[in-house]
Length: 353
Image 1 (cartoon, rainbow, N blue to C red):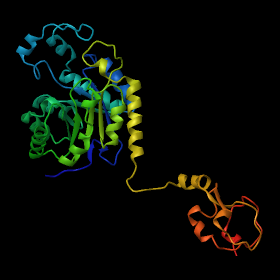
Image 2: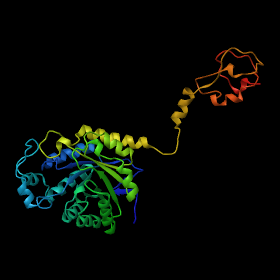
Image 3: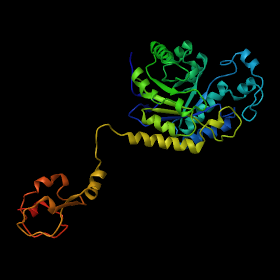
Image 4: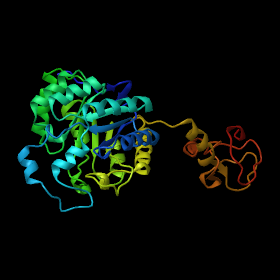
């Protein structure tokens, strides 16, 4: 099985040696409005996101007629209207709208991504020019969709919510068997929002060790702090639901990051990556300079005459750290002074006979 720790989404390297790739998950938060989608794309770019992601389902590709018939009314009127079918019909993107939104992303300078829910939608995303194919958690056990994504020749981003490790392993094997060479797995908990105790971020290094591919985090929690923790544990990609206004009508606005949160997330996960640095111990040039001021040197505790033989009670240790180091004091003991010294004098080797 060929694995890699770095993949490329268009011209962007994604892996442990690169800053986290941030996906602003618009999903259906465009509410079927291209103008709103355009505004969200522009703002996401301004916030520092690498990509915006949509969902490419239609009224026929995801939900059965019987399921529509079972969902004809919502108790929560603040976030929903009409029937399930009416909401899906309103919020779906037509193939033509995919091309339009992808063109907006290209003009803005941000990657266009979307989740495919059937093989035909994979083909649509390839035709539109999406640089990767996203597969949602619900489809970890959908081999025909996984095969279509793998055969697209595009990198695949697979969320792992709802799934056992065996199911994830089977999905990865299906993708590999069908030619997928660039794969990112997203650790995900498909609860909106999850209790932090349910998030289990230690799955991030575990998945990396199990499958030898870059691991990201699809974050459904409130706030941005868990994304920072995920990066600290090795996540190379962060996906976060995103809206312009949490109070808007629609399924996901209320639990999505607004532009202020998205901007903070982009900055904070970048800072977390920078702060991880290297595993080998390093003292920076700035620290080397600072320790000259903050460390101590050997000083004379009281006035002494030339020829005096130095004893421990003659010494003290004070800033700055520019003279004889405290750990060098044993080499001072028993030495004679070459000249008279005042109290608090910073001892140097030239003071010794």
